[in-house]
Length: 93
Image 1: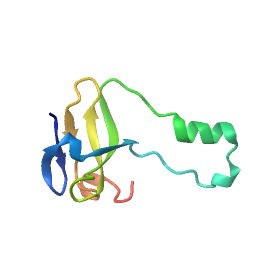
Image 2: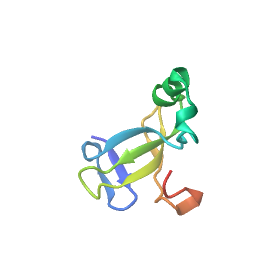
Image 3: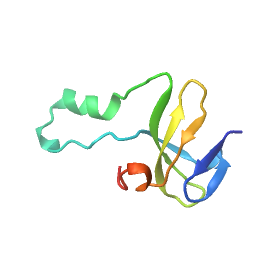
Image 4: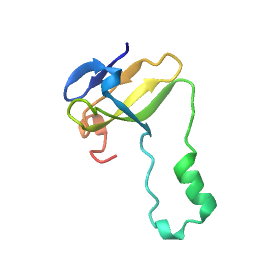
């Protein structure tokens, strides 16, 4: 069982969390201007690097808050999970 460090609750089992995809993906400025191909790119296409990767996670069985975490996709090790607003991280990103 892998432990994930929730910024508010501390380390908990991964079963308490929900993966939310790649972090820092901005919503389109004018959604009505996007054609079908652009929407498909926004909704379905994400980076898939080997190594450190910024992700969104929700502590569903705990505080129910979303947070960004830096995880190594090769080792699955969580490298950082700062509270939003800490270390220059945006609160709503």
